[in-house]
Amino acid sequence: MDRDEIIRLLATTDADEVRALLKAADEARRLSVGDEVHLRGIIEFSNHCARNCRYCGLRRGNKALRRYRIPDEEIIELACGVRDAGIATVVLQAGEDPAHTTEHICRLIGRIKDATGLVITLSIGERSFDDYRAFKDSGADRYLLKHETASPELYRRLHPDSDHGNRIQCLRWLKQLGYETGAGNMVGLPGQTLATLADDILLMRALDIDMIGIGPFIPHPDTPLKGAAAGDLELVLKVIAVTRLVTGNTNIPATTALAALDPEIRLKALAAGANVIMPDFTPVHYKRHYEIYPGRSGVPSDIARVLAGLEKDLAGIDRRIGKGPGDRKSRSND
Ligand code: SF4
Image (cartoon, rainbow, N blue to C red; front, side, top):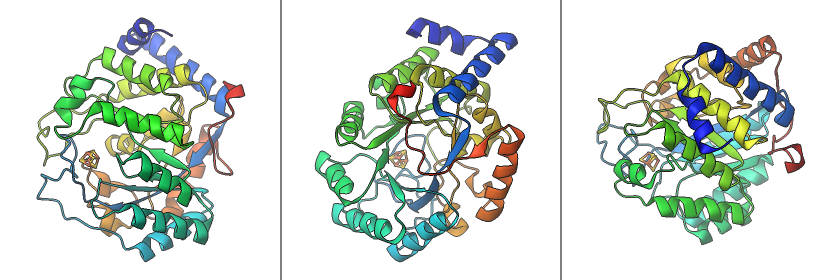
């Protein structure tokens, strides 16, 4: 699929064509990664952030947000909870918190690995090559760093204190170091076009990204973009579908941001090419302050009930919870 074809598919509003696109993506998902839906238990361990991204509620300029850092002992306990729930991967996510020194993160990774044996995914933003190498040497297996947008110009407007070139360089380093590497974008960013979205998909293919998070832009009331419209959910589904068709055997989550706009939509995303869900293990008294976008405190927190409900929902669409770590499938499945 070339750029023009991707743009044409993203632009279509013909109901039959949209249905055919989602169905083709679902079939591609079935053939390339199977019917299992892999779970990743996420722990949002700090909402401090040194950056000022214009859409994000964690931006340092948001003085209305109550900040927290979960103590290491508690993070390790939460990771044990992920393991005890039968989930093989923990995702440690935080803002770009200056308190997270390389030594601290390495120590934390080592302790979680020793205590749980889980696959560890880090998502703590842009760091140096040496940091990424140190995290890997300490036991981190995967790293999520959304590229946000393939357009350097749009990126500059949304991220006044970040550099698009450095972001992409970080993704290259992560691949080079052997991480399963995640990137992704937001659909509906002010100033974004369908051509930008097509470039996002092609960029992720070019970088051979392993995990791809695609979610809607949701305006946060305490950010400069508070007055902008939220991303269109049907367009998000189309982007997921085309991404599945273009990238083959990648792992694509049905993101929590989707669920924040419409609890039913996650199943639709799973039927449009997605194959991963990331249940949130962050205790609710912290989670309500991890406000990248609003509406997160509505996400249910009783994890046993969440997993039971998920199992039932998946059975209804002939899918099942995956066993094992759910690595990206071997490239021979492409
Ligand atoms: S998007 Fe990430 S780097 Fe930017 S302000 Fe939010 S948490 Fe910080």
